Image (tube, rainbow, N blue to C red):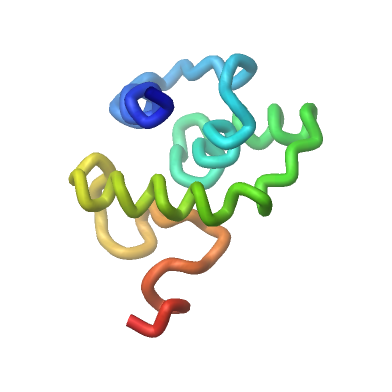
Amino acid sequence: MRHAFLLLLLAGCASADVGKMSDLDLCYTARVDEDNKSKAESEIQRRKVDCQKYSAQIQKMWDEEQRAGVTGGGIGDATPKQGGGMLNKGY
């Protein structure tokens, strides 16, 4: 269910209500959704959320969306900005 909401968010909902997002979804939005990045980052600071603890989950969500073809672009266009990914895994 969380992924369905996130897919709708990334599909074009430019006025996301970051105040109602879970911490995980908020951190994910701040990393991959350029349209809502600043609002998400502001909410992260307000809540004092440590997004590092969600890094593995965020990477998994992003990988799933790439396999499903939800987020477009090449390498680096929408990748989570914490690093990780294929380059650090030795692929």
